[in-house]
Length: 262
Image (cartoon, rainbow, N blue to C red; front, side, top):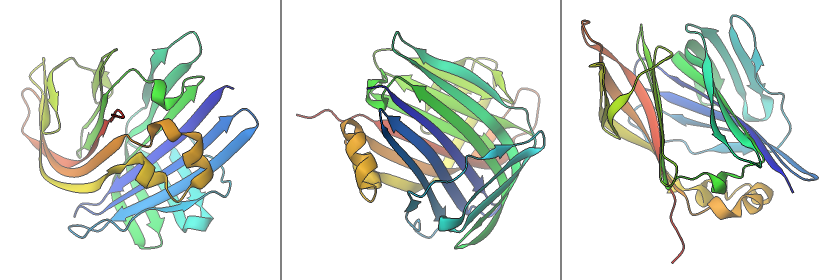
């Protein structure tokens, strides 16, 4: 049976480093249909509050020329984004059975996110991933890195798949720039741009099975990925663009590692 996943990812980081991350996913597999929404909050140096989930149906985020709006009443969540940069996207994978399309809908925006823990305002980011006919465990990568850095006047977004079919994309203000080096500590680009990531604080360090354990029906549907380990960080970033003074801001970035059964 054909599996399709549509997933929204939304975040905000305040000037003092508080973080809210929210997901909205729609999973279809033959006659099965699951909607799930989730939110987690990091309050500065305090440990993350943990995820709160709902499997009640919600409308997908609404896009307008000005930005984006979304609410998940069961989670006490309301999102308002004002666009600062145009979006972009790419087809990441095409096979005979399907495709993976990635849309960086709002690479940098002014964000206001109301949660049960309070309201967070700062720079935010939104993306939309569509997987049609390709299951997550069929992605030809043993390691996947993703991240975004936002400053007052610039954004850097990156994807890095390592494995059988490598894929690496780095976007600076929406423009693709080739990377000379990319790690969890920073990025060096061939045009002289450099992003350094320091003062890391872990937001997540768990398997996807642990993360999905409260979502029994959905966890069972995606059982082949429960051993994948996710580490996510909030880091202080310094961006150096050629001919410009350094720019500071916050980065959110993650590493997914496939752990094969012994």
